[in-house]
Image (cartoon, rainbow, N blue to C red; front, side, top):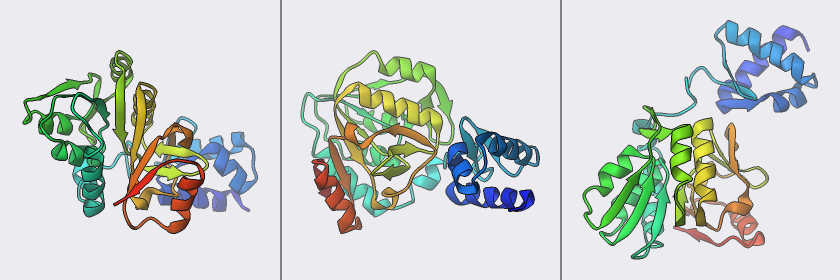
Amino acid sequence: MLVAERHQKIIELVNERSSIRVTELSNIFSVTEETIRRDLEKLEKEQKLQRSHGGAVSVREQDSEIHFSERVITNVLEKKAIAIEAAKQVKSGDRIILDASTTAWYMAKELPNLPLTVITNSIKVVMELSKKEKIEIISMGGRLSPRSLSYVGPLAEQSINMYHVNKVFLSCKGFDFNDGLSDSNELQAMLKKRMIERSDQVYLMVDSSKIGKRAFSQISPLSEVDFVITDKNIDHTSCQLFTDRNIPIVVV
């Protein structure tokens, strides 16, 4: 394969998947990782992609995060159904974490006005829960991500390390049975990993469109998940794979 042809294929793959790793490109094109890094450096100079730690992301998504206003109108019925079921898993006196996903925001709308403690990095979740006076809200600090309307970075991670909760409710951009949970944004992925580490039980709220997909940054392996809530469009094979791994799944 000619170099120019490889470069064109790399651009197509990055745009198709939003992000891709150097190791994967090396395997696809049967060249060394160093060769791929030189390719990415050249393509970045030509503004055809953007290099990231360990790979590249599409320039169509400048920080690889889709804006909250766009995410909130995607798979709405599925996300709302998942959120309703997730809210049923919360009991009076629980201490929980909600991430900055749109599904978590829908869940915040469904939470009853009970004595709870909710820790979150989401501005939208904070605003929604502020209407319920019995719920104690703890908002993480950190760097504001304008696309997700949430706080991320070292300060947010340090904040979450101060607490221990019963349950965490989170979503992700991709879920693969071999690679586990992943996100398109590295800072969000790192923070969600901390959330999982500080919780007794992990509830994954994931609509079926994300199952079988891999995003750029890994959050955690599937073994870290205790419960899965998804929508009725999930295929039978995926349901069976959860069962085979002894992970309870609720389909709504």
